[in-house]
Every structure is written in C-alpha cells, then in structure tokens.
Amino acid sequence: MQRTVSYSRTILSQTMPISMANSAGNIHGGEIMKIMDSAAGVAAKRHARSPVVTARVNELEFMTPVHVGDLLICTAELIFVGRTSMEVLVTVEVENLQVEAPPTVALTGYFTMVAIGPDGRPKPVPGLIPETPAEKRRYEERKKIYLERKQAASSARQ
Ligand SMILES: CC(C)(COP(=O)(O)OP(=O)(O)OC[C@H]1O[C@@H](n2cnc3c(N)ncnc32)[C@H](O)[C@@H]1OP(=O)(O)O)[C@@H](O)C(=O)NCCC(=O)NCCS
Image 1 (tube, rainbow, N blue to C red):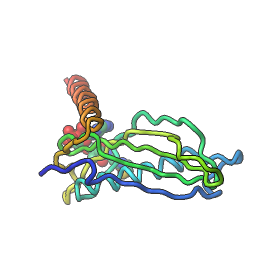
Image 2 (cartoon, rainbow, N blue to C red; image 1 turned 120 degrees about the vertical axis):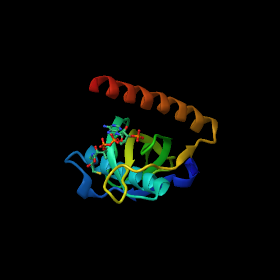
Image 3 (spheres, protein in one colour; image 1 turned 45 degrees about the vertical axis):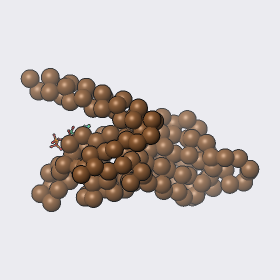
C-alpha cells in the first residue's frame, strides 16, 4: 500500500499563552518543540495508522522569536519513508494578530518517527507517493541522507 504526502499532512494551530513564555516575553523553544513533535506524531500516525515514537530530531533552526499572543501554525508533512521509519518536515509559522501582515516562518525541523506494532517492535509502514516537484525533490534528498545514515550505522557495527 502507498499513500500520498497530502493524505497525512497535518496543521496544528494555537495562540501562545503567557504560561509558555520566558521573562522576556518570548515563547520557550522547548514549548514550540513539543508542539512540533505532536504535529509530527499526528502526521506519522495518520500515514501508518499505528502508534509511533520519535527516534530522532534533526536540523532544528530557529529563525525568528515567537511572542505571547502570536498565532502559531505548525505544519507537518511526510517527506520520506523507509521500512518502519518516517521522516517528517515540520514548519512553524507565526502570525501577529495585532497587525495586518501574513504569517512568517519562525522555525523548521526534521523528525524521524518509527511505527510500533502490537508487539512493541518497529512495524512496516505504507510507502510514500511524492506528487509535486517539491515533494519529489525533498524525497530524493532525504532518501540519500537515510541511506547514508544506514551505511554509517552498518559500518560502525562491523
Ligand atoms: C526508535 C526505536 C523504536 C528503534 O528501535 P530499534 O530496535 O533500533 O529498531 P530498528 O533498528 O529495527 O530500527 C527501526 C527503524 O528506526 C530507524 N531508527 C532507529 N534509530 C534511529 C535514529 N537514531 N535515527 C534515525 N532513525 C532511526 C531505523 O533506521 C529503522 O528505520 P527503517 O525500518 O525505516 O529502515 C527505539 O530505539 C526506541 O524505542 N527509542 C526510544 C523512542 C522514544 O522513547 N522516543 C521518545 C518518546 S516518543
């Protein structure tokens, strides 16, 4: 079985409460990472239709601060799948609700989620069908990284 990227694309949005802020009024990076992990988890569960765990978080890049009252829009989409693992790109946009301006990208990150079967072990997931030129390009990029990581892990074991 194979599923498209759009099948599992997930958008979570919420306004940022003061309880998530530091004394400067910026939202803690850890709070945002938690929301990103949740969004990645939902997208991966939608694709695999099973429980998942987070195996790796890569290339988290904070570009702009997020403030109390901002609307945070977190989009998670699968960009590659291996046998039991799924690579999810999470993009966080922020929108200042007090001014007339479009949302801007505040941070991005790559989450590797692994599907878990009833026996508690990693379980095979459906294949991924990249459809748009951007999806196809990202799929090939992440496939290369996945294969390089596999090769490095296998060399380290020998
Ligand atoms: C992730 C986990 C299930 C992998 O178990 P494992 O016994 O190493 O299983 P495998 O070696 O068969 O690997 C399963 C898949 O995970 C991938 N994987 C495992 N560790 C990884 C890592 N550190 N980075 C990226 N991918 C990883 C493997 O490449 C494999 O992918 P594939 O099947 O698509 O090729 C296990 O390490 C685990 O449970 N970790 C803790 C997860 C956790 O508690 N997360 C936080 C809360 S959700």
